[in-house]
Length: 267
Image 1 (cartoon, rainbow, N blue to C red):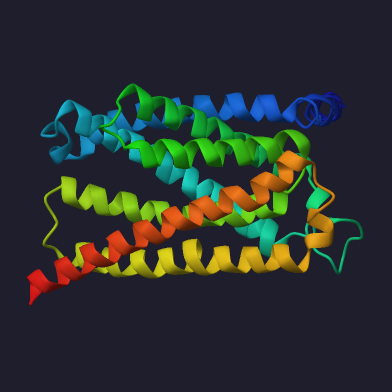
Image 2 (cartoon, rainbow, N blue to C red; image 1 turned 135 degrees about the horizontal axis):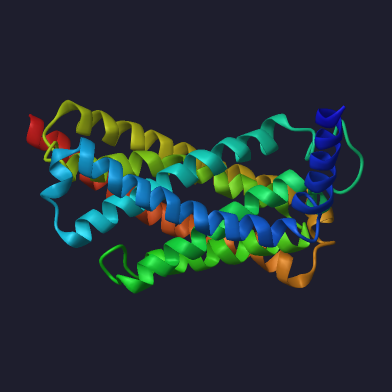
């Protein structure tokens, strides 16, 4: 009986507070920031114990090592949920649910976006604090645009489908970070480094080029629903993915050049 009462109280707390629409954005954003701090500290502790090469790195390299662990964990988290919402969940299904897909949201979809906003806040804070060691102005622009779009979708519930489509591109982040780790560990001439480069190229082409093309096509097909968004929301739907697409094409060219250079050295 006592257990049943405790369970009821827990459900009331979960539905009334943690998943309350007005509370979710702020709770999840703060949670995302604290999660980043936790991952940073755990990475620092575990790397000191299990990776000999970690102690040989410079101070700023150790900071970047820890920072990339944060971005990897975030990428795995948000990519999983993005794939779920875009391709599996009924939330944005036109066949199973009625209503405009551009105005759909849920407590879980808003919560996940809040975690992502918390990550972008923490990461851009580190980038600016250690500027330009963790990334140049292109990273600042990328994070500011991403943070604005994700935060808007989180707070208003508008355009969450397209926000999640763009966030699927985070699937390339673990590969990019692994490439940096291999380089830092002195494994730049290994087969793993070459395989990583090829996989990273394919993933980038699919997740950051082809998927963006699909998103623009989806917006074109559903422009009548996109028009109902507020002006700022429409601006974000068109401008942010466009700017990110240009940046993605630039980075793809750099990836191709780096891969060709690596393969040439192996011959």
